[in-house]
Length: 120
Image (cartoon, rainbow, N blue to C red; front, side, top):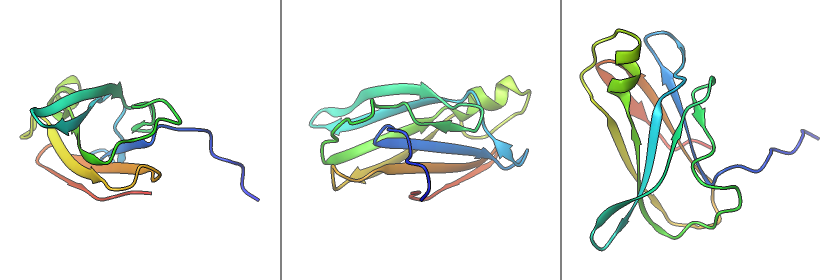
């Protein structure tokens, strides 16, 4: 039996820098939730050495169903590395339909493109 995973935030992300073929460490991340007046900050974080941010919300946080947005501050990341980029940030909206599920948002990034999908 594999070891149990440690408790984690119900929303996590992972950033891979396709220009280097490696994870993207030290990238600032922002999580917002949509309410009746617009998006409201829920938390902020920074990717670790493996390009992951698993601390956006405390483990065990019960999510509210609704629309969220995660923002990756890509220009800051590339500027620190002396690389010009096209996108100052990447915003990925997504919908939480079940409070019991885990939501993982990966981002595969280069200075002039990005892609995402729902991870596990």
